[in-house]
Image (tube, rainbow, N blue to C red):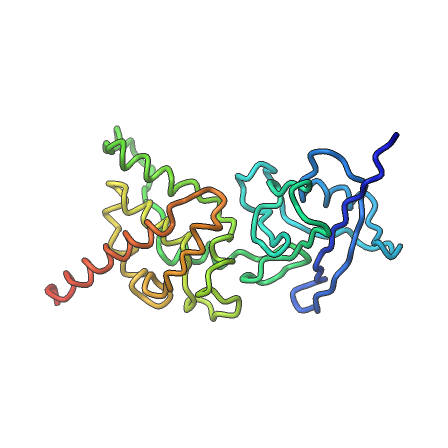
Length: 254
């Protein structure tokens, strides 16, 4: 006897950045191993609402489908998470999908995460190398530092940590809002590298300015929401220590 179960999905939609949001519900046949993204793909094959109205298919971001790219982050049943690892059989129905609230909506579930990349640029979260000649073997790192840097390097820029941070607001003027835990952790990743330490003061100066580490309210939601288990609170604490030491040194240098 065929399985008659269905999956009901309620999507918060928005036709453009300046358009008003609205809700639409869809129902698809149940199949084993559905996740939120595969369910959305199924809707796309026949975008018909539960009211019998044929509509355009909901838009969403996705790339790797294995929690590596970070692009499919969304709010699922009130909780921010990755759509690719949100298994339908483990979710209450109707499954309610909403875009991240701390980023401007582009369309439906697609948001603009530019603020995360602007924060990385502001903090100079990279190691400058010109690449014109062979630098030889790189500096040696202890296994402990290697392991910790690897944990920080797992960031997929999904935005989950910003979504749950009470210090992050979607309408913050550019360059003034809190940079967020992800950018702070990436700045520490660079500061822990022997070559990156050459530019550590530039990163710390940026983190001591508006929207820097002092703007953290210590809610610690970020470390709970991170899908890659990055030690974000440890990173924030370490950057706080480094900026304090630099602040004291700067007093005596003046």
